[in-house]
Image 1 (cartoon, protein in one colour):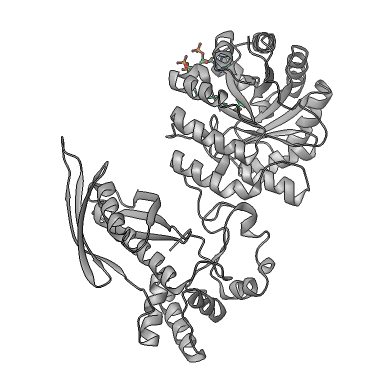
Image 2 (spheres, rainbow, N blue to C red):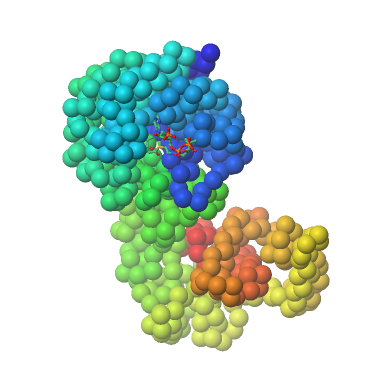
Length: 526
Ligand SMILES: CC(=O)SCCNC(=O)CCNC(=O)[C@H](O)C(C)(C)COP(=O)(O)OP(=O)(O)OC[C@H]1O[C@@H](n2cnc3c(N)ncnc32)[C@H](O)[C@@H]1OP(=O)(O)O
Ligand SMILES: CC(C)C(=O)C(=O)O
């Protein structure tokens, strides 16, 4: 028989907001996402470090791999409680129990549309199944959370009855799911009050979806109305438009409402990157807190303000969520920002040189071009009439890749390393891996630069599609750089991006620009 792990704090209603992370369950329901047990373990460890209260590790009855993933997470002995989803049937509860979780999350839909068309059940039968599953789970000594799926489209009087009866059957936590994201903040608040009246003394939770972009606002509203727990996912991933984003809801509650959410905000970014890498779902650049641009500035007026006092255009310091600010050259740039960016590369310019460089940056911007750091350096070189130290220390002068059936993909490269050619070859799991490994092994002679992130996306369709490769590289001194390349040959595009990224790092090393000046490369972009 399972029992709630000793050592877990009892649930309390002392003003603490409980975060129920469902990245590994509802987040994994994002179309196309599937996590292996090893990946679930890696994410669960990170969520535990982040400080979430509950990790919903999965839905054990849904597959053998899912069962194994939940079992593995449960056996880690994490500080966070581990929960698993179960339909309102004893078989699902048994699988969750066998996986060894602390909390079983029993659910059944209660709205008429779900009852009539999907479950083909009467209200009475659904209620009876819920009560039976909850009391059955509870009889095994675990914590039980009950969700009335599609609560926000359920007849409120029926919802009241359901919550009251599952509470009497032993549910510890009552969750109000806005399954299709149609609730407003006012409606969620009303439902929290209804649930409190139906089941006084129970922990109340909200589970909001983002179909109308209100998931975070609704979660916050639920907490302000008296719920003590919200469900959320890292980066807001999940079914359709996703779930409430954990990082946004938690930090709105912490910083804008002064609530005790108990997570470590400085681990938010690394958690976001881990989830993005393992799910393949990257947040859009403008996503709050974790998007690439959340702490980036291009506009001259903003950069000037931030250089003088960051709070002019930053609501919180990037470091609060484990990030660094960065400035970007481009059409909207101004001279203060460009001067600061050049200084980061150790390049000092006089007023006239700066004026010319800014003019050229704007000319490129007016042509619709993204102005990368490499472009800025090239402009500086032409204006100053000399090479900024260290530029293009590495270039590719030869590449042969052999791949096929029954052979290990092998790449032979010839690299111009400053003033001499170096040849080497490497094997890899594929031709790109082999080529990138070969380049890194040559460059190791002068600096240990490793690939920390690699992304490939097709920009056009068809077998002659253009592919965009984005790499992020890091050296042993903590310098980071991103680079991108586009081409129809993905091996060449990958190699170009890698070489560009390495040159950026070498540039920083040679000028001693390690990011400790006010202008910092976040490593988010090139
Ligand atoms: C709102 C949410 O996010 S709920 C969670 C959704 N997540 C998932 O569905 C992911 C994992 N799901 C699965 O792997 C599969 O759907 C399984 C293993 C759970 C079930 O697979 P199958 O037995 O092949 O059934 P299928 O998925 O086609 O249909 C769902 C069945 O569950 C029943 N059901 C759905 N929800 C519940 C519930 N809460 N309580 C009891 N029964 C339920 C349906 O009535 C249907 O039953 P039927 O087969 O007797 O008609
Ligand atoms: C199981 C419940 C909480 C759910 O995922 C939903 O209703 O969206």
